[in-house]
Image (tube, rainbow, N blue to C red; front, side, top):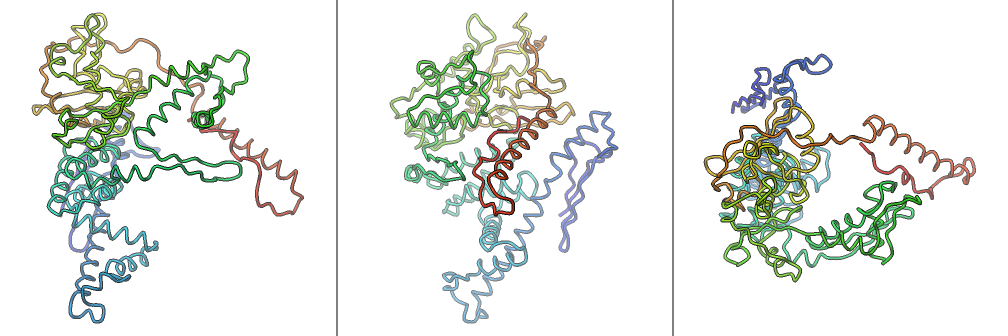
Length: 550
């Protein structure tokens, strides 16, 4: 096999190649010129090549791992043939597979010895090799070709482990491989969501954890972590856990700006207060504290906590098992979404496609989309539309890709499904306030909606809307607006600022941690005689400096 790969920059210096023959794997990774201290980043093409090299030069790890799997799989086949054949001696016969030292165990033991790993790690490696060569070979080839990384492949192995019908598994393998190869830019979250939806749609019983297993796993555990600190683990359904987190965020949102605790510390204190029935208070210690933590204020914020689920109407009716999408989580099974719809606090709202065609902006305010358009766009993308970001769509801003012209709305970017997508506050601000970033959204001839993001270096990433399988009709809506001629200049206002520079934040964090460690050491030295054995320190080390603010 002889493969040549040209980097995204198109630069000749970025040409890479792989040559695989019977005796060697030769990998040549093109290294852009001028890297290191002597880097000459004067041109946009040079910077794009450097960025592409930094982001994708490790894509050949999957190729090497695939050939390692192939090698250990060959050893396993040889060991199995040896055990099955007449030359197998006392170990031959079908009963060899019921013994502790079966062929897989023996091959794994040899691998563990050679690689210096534990037996269980080696057996997992051999089992992954079997999955790569036998169960999901098409997905394995995606890893070999660098489209998915080894970690993502191993997750697919886990997600398909319960599929037991060979023909169905072959179909699911082909479907996953096809989907991952056509949706554009991938991330760990997108791979997990896409694979999960495919498995749940075609073999609901093969979902890694069934609904009944989840129900049986509900429990509360308390684990001691150290001197004076323990953790409380509450295992609950996905929707309940998400509500709990959102409620805690609603509670802590009432503290004033001078509260010294980190977000994690506030959540912990709020959870304890809610469970113990005590009041959650701000710890600023100021007489002019502006915290809004009254029972009425907290109840008002908690009442606004909503979980959004996007589901096909036929799935709710039982005519289809197409998985739904739970905002902030990902795909959920048809059985799960029907249970959610049956809850007494569930509110069902249908999206009328006819309404989307009729008008997509609010009457009297061309900038604001209708509630139906807002829900449809967020449901279509599922998360922040920026590559690699997994912020929930309903916790993101809805952005006009081509900027809306507030002075002359008909000349700017339209308020339409074709020109709207969710962006988290960070990426929305990045596009708005940092020069050089360009995003685009296109609908191809097949009605598939794509987003493109180009970095200031000129590196472009393209990806398909996450939930096109769930809402394919949105790509076939007829747009009635003219093409924009004078897009707006973006949002009014100034770019957000840091309270201190990154270097200053690191220095402050380092000094606070050193001071806390010094005070703890001085306490120990004051109470323990010189030369005595110190086995435990009663001070909560590191509790005063909090999280890094950078």
